[in-house]
Length: 115
Length: 479
Image 1 (tube, rainbow over the protein chains, first blue to last red):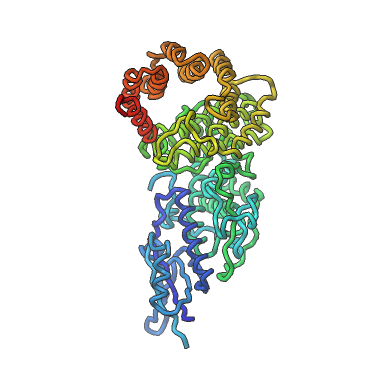
Image 2 (spheres, each protein chain N blue to C red; image 1 turned 120 degrees about the vertical axis):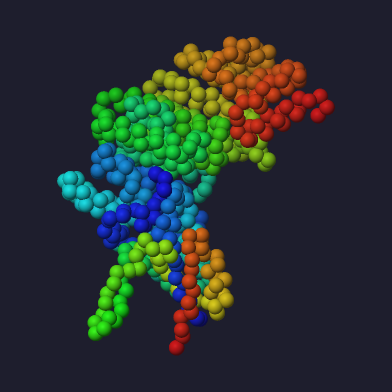
């Protein structure tokens, strides 16, 4: 089945002002969604990306310039991803629409190119 | 960002290096829940967190870290615990719920505290002690297997299991309760501090429960913590005066329960959480060898009896249902069973505190097949003892109801004359509401209606208001 990469972006301060109880409710919503995807055979993988700043590499003349970034304070930083299996793009979008992540940020879906 | 709430990554530690590669131990594939809770077989569903896991873990972690760091670092303990909760929110959606969620959270909070302390040279000495402290470390966690279900356990959501105490960290939690209820603090400060640090409630939640502005609650907490710092209150079981400290804690816990139970104001959900938290705290005291006193069991029995009636207290329309009219089949028998167990244990010692007498009264109600077939003579005798112990206008009011059931409504009305002008009952809607009920039983609808109207002018909750309006309508001649 075709795979779709779902990049989760959110504001670094998305959790500000939440109580412990609300925090637990949010985790539960994510776990419930993941379980639904898994039970439907749709979940192929998921990872959180490490906090802290990444590196951006670019050729600079004869060498390679390594720059810090993107910064984790940036709005809309990619914090993690899910790899979904779906029949087509429409179905992948449909599955993603249920994700609790949309309360806190955006999801970017890209189809994994099949050889 | 208000105090007592979670913070985002950026705000968490502006100048901090990334947290120690947080949990050295990430999620075991779909682990089986919370240590000490029921096994997966009893789980209501896979991947469900035990109710109030975050709150209760937060309370226990703050207590343990406060012991390790010293009470002067209570705010630091709260901060790193909040950071740990944020990390869980960021990590668990991808990695799954770890096998030992509490251990995971504690490890992250501890690492975070170490980071903070190491940055602070003047606190370096403490860091060594903290590092040496053995932690109930979670098992190393393998990367999540996306094909396996995330499991964890969930206590069945009956009120009985909601009210269960924690299994571990009881020493720290107990010391924390006694510290938060330190007699140097005002009662309101004790309640707020206990809810915040032991209960894991946020400032907003406390504010909602007590109809206060969040800023006022935050200020109350800051003052309370400063006072504890200034007094150099040690984080230990008090060697002297433990009995008085327990007494203070019981009063705080009972106030917390009544605030939740009385339903005078505030958010429904938060209020029932207050009742649950009060029972949980009393159970921690009752279970600990240092504090398992008869009066602790008496208060716990009393609150459990009262909590058992919560499911029957409102009807389908959300109006309050009086004890006389409650469907007793809806009372929580499991809680009554627990209450009876503690009632038995509170008899040891032979001393009857107010909690003993009130628990005895609550037991009479719990055991009665109906309102009419209640042992009102026994209840009246217990109220007489209660009044002899310490006079209170609210007890006079309740005793008048029992008296009316033994000697008739006019005797009840006569008894209430003694408190008609009591300043403590001014603004207490239950006084005119009780008078109204007694006059109605005398057949005087007009006087009853006048008292119901007076009750409606006083502050009360929405379910209570609906109840009063309904009773008032029943007094009208043509209805």
